[in-house]
Length: 185
Length: 154
Image (cartoon, rainbow over the protein chains, first blue to last red):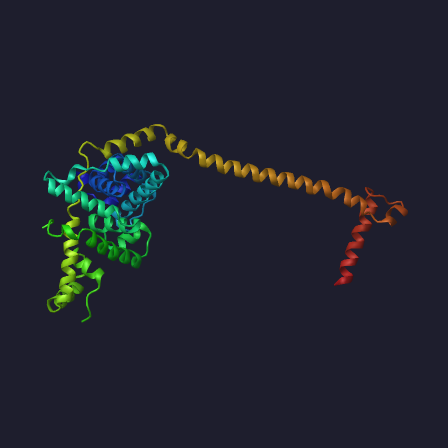
């Protein structure tokens, strides 16, 4: 109960003093968002789980020097983003990993209705078919709810570059998904 | 008012526009059919994208996995991290040793090459006067020469 009332920064301070229960509380609070982001970036639940574990280990290692300047989640997402991009680069160099990634993309979250599942698949493919930077911008903006400034902090791109990427990404997706326009309503 | 920028329409649909700007933009949309069509397109895309939901696997427990790893790492006194960084440490150590070795060899060569030249350049008058190298007077004489030469120049 005590952990639930603590802010993320307070939990990080406690973790910096060696309190592993604080790490548990942070993981409990953010695990699902971290996992979802890693999955969307990588398209593979197993790799997403590894990234999630690694993210919380990085939190633990960096806790003693953590300074709450930016929002905690922005900092957290930056770790997830960078780890996921490293993982993607490795997968690009290793064709076996890429094959595995493509076959493991099926996710059970699309719902039980076949039409809805088909739409989810189309959307996922459309997003994954975008140019890499547009894809990342859309995932962080549409699915993780980050502002332009936050996306800029997570990715290291300028704010104007983020805005330009988002405009192009939404435009491309509008064209790609035009035939499903009425389906979603 | 000018037409709305595309990025602002996206932010309006995402409900992340600043209140003042949102108010202005909504007022413009009332009077601008072109912008209303554009925002309908953006909203349509936004809604379709919502169909891609992901539900993290229920059996995954990052808390347990991270804590277990953390406990193991604490129990080994940081051994896990040290092992992971051993490659970096070895590379740095090798660089330092190599630099020292190159410096040492270079230094020895430099010293070894200087002595014979020094002997060869001993002035002839020193031996004529019977003041060969190694005798204390010859070094005093040379020092005097250098000092007086320096003063003369200034």
